[in-house]
Image (cartoon, rainbow, N blue to C red; front, side):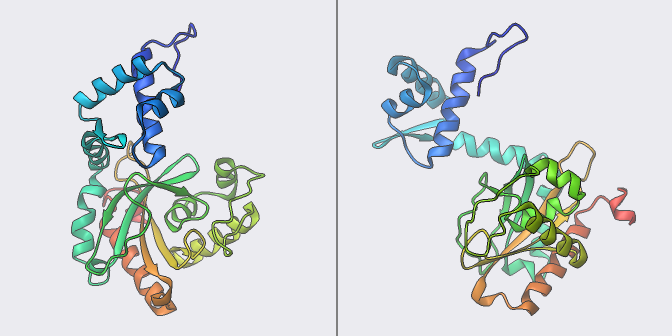
Length: 262
């Protein structure tokens, strides 16, 4: 990140460097030594050490035997971001009141560029432990939640987001890697009312998701998604989960919005 003002100067270099340092740790997925952080920032170890000291004092970093890692304060800030939105606050109650969803792993995601960014997670009583923790991302074109969000757009809008010449990474042997393939998948999602990820982003995992219109004009559109073990994802269960997600989305939709009146 390199923020500059209109004269080409960074108005707060220490802040910019601190944000970059936090980004390095977020991308690393584990502790990094002072030497590794200094190298990643292109700074002297002494300057990097000063940044680490200030961030550690604020709870943004923690020092371990292996190096520095993100601190608990970053989790608090992430939770505060998600809690700004009415639908995320009510999400857990709606899941617990659903006979189907109360036992499922249900997640809330928003679109961030061409990625689905995960904001909240309802574990359920028989939940999976898989790799989409809060704050993580998946390509929107390949995940059920991302596809649910993209399905509310026109093909032209989708193309503008992912790129007309987009080639998607083959995360599994089932992954569609072209824009044409994605548009076919989105057309099917619109017809059904829910999007499907049939082991296209994770082997052994089937995702089902629906779009959730924003509560207020300033809120982002969201998606609700469920992850199911592929061995347990027969068509009857997928349809049952899809219908439950649609009901949950209806319960979480602002009753005074245009979406609620459709």
